[in-house]
Every structure is written in structure tokens, then in C-alpha cells.
Image (cartoon, rainbow, N blue to C red; front, side, top):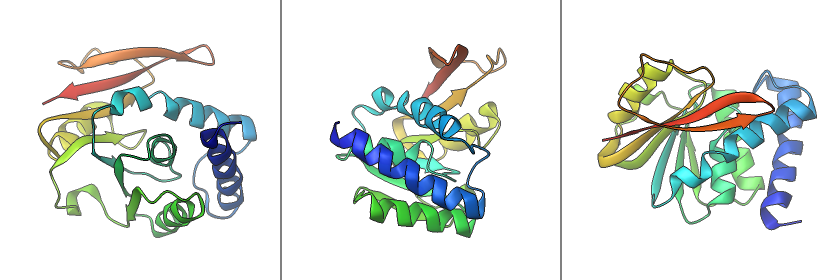
Amino acid sequence: MTELDTTLAKFKALFAKWNDKINLSAARSPAEVDEHVRDSLHVIPHLDGASRVLDVGSGGGFPVLIAAAALPAINFVALEPVHKKHAFLRTAARELGLANLSAYASRVEDHDASDYDIAMSRATFDLGEWLAIGATKIRPGGRVIGFEAIHRADVTDVTRHAYSLDGKPRAIVIKQT
């Protein structure tokens, strides 16, 4: 078992404990949580070259906690306005030893920084809306990353990286500025 596998196993146990009490996600069974973890892992190759990454609507930690565990050299900032979920993110970062993750109880519109290499969000906003919002948080030449479950023909000027998750088509959508 690799160090990442060990960290992900600890994350899943911590997530299950907290999710029973504060509803971090609709994922209830170990299989559903595992699916979210596997989905989150698909973003890892697309974070290459970044030093600062913003994750908006971090909730139960998908994908930010997974990415921070896999990429310890990158500094991650997680924004989650729901205080209970924010408390989970801080606890998870501490218990999993993720010194590269800072979590803030803040909405994206209240977060002043706009110099990230990458801004990402998973299942928080409409994809088109997210790409526009995310573009306000990155430096020139940065990237905005979203997750797509159903192909959106109205979302253009992006690069799609398709993959399959349990037989369902998915894509990482990237808008380069």
C-alpha cells in the first residue's frame, strides 16, 4: 500500500464519521464515497505545473483533499462557506497531515485573491457559470477546471479530457486564459 493509498483510506474513514453527523455529501455507502474519490483523482494530471490552486465549494473535500494528498508540492486553498463543512476540511487537513492545504469559511465572491495558477470546482455551480467565475480568480495564463457529467454543447472554448467512471461518461473541462 502506497502512502497515498494509506492517506485516502484515512480520509474515507474520517469522511464517513463526519458525514453521518453533518451531511457532507449525498454519498453514504463506502462504494459511493469511493466513486467520489476515484472521480477526484482524475483531476490530478491536470494540476501539473501549478504552485497555487483554489478549490471553490470544497464541501466534503472532493477534489481538494484528494488532490492535496496526491500533490504535496502544490499549495491548495479550499473555500467552503458552510461552517460545519469548513470545520471538516480543517480537521481533515490536520489529521491527514496536509500542510499544503488551507481552508477558509468564505464564499468565492468574498475571496479577494485572484492570482491562482488554477481554480477548480466540482458540482458546485453550473459549469458555464463556474468557468466565468473561476476566470476571475486566476492569474493571466492560468486555468479554470470543472467537472462535466453531461456534455454541454453550450460550453465552448474549452478542452475536454474525457474519461469513464463506472461506465458513465465524464470529462475534466479546462478553460485556459
